[in-house]
Length: 314
Image (tube, rainbow, N blue to C red; front, side, top):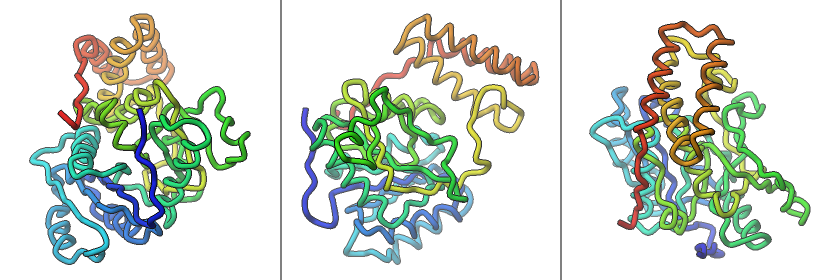
């Protein structure tokens, strides 16, 4: 298994994939950040998840007056219905593969990459593969909150030997097994070998499952000097004690998806432990009983929920 090596050109064959849904104001900031990159992607793919806030009209205008015409290709994919972040990323990655991109660089519509984010990400990935293995499956950025602190929701999970590259003098590289989709660079060969994210997940845990899947044989790498600002709401982590009427719909997907992963890709014991964690956390957090039963139903649903991997080359 090999990887596509970088060239000396300042523009790599990278397809930047942005998935958006009803965040037009933030999407405009994302696009401005992309336009300012010191290393421009070859292609920008915008996946509109059937937005209803005027995004489609704006993207029509943006395409007609694309400021980087001749320097970067623009492809807009408008979906007929909202298929969630998972479905959007799967669609965008498949499109990147279809057009022949060597890498896809995926991130959400509220992540603003600093000017050299892609340049540093590519450099870090190349240094890591040269120093460690050509089979490193992804590189992710350091994600900060809008106030400059670390983004609590987007910390990758380091390996036990996370400092291996640092010990070799590559001080800005950390080995990781899991990352979020706020900023991840994925080579073409990875999509061929491991497929695409589960589109059926809709939202939550799709990024964790996918990065763990592709890191099964070799860890990924976090590039600490590639920085993306995540303009989310409150900068707090999430756990099952926080379930309320407003966020229960998201937790429902997360519990179903993670339960399915634990059962079908780990073991029955892992699934049972997860069920206990959900029960215990909701009890400690005094989650409303009606919402608790909704989450228990999702744990049951996870037993039959086991999507198959899609491969872009098929």
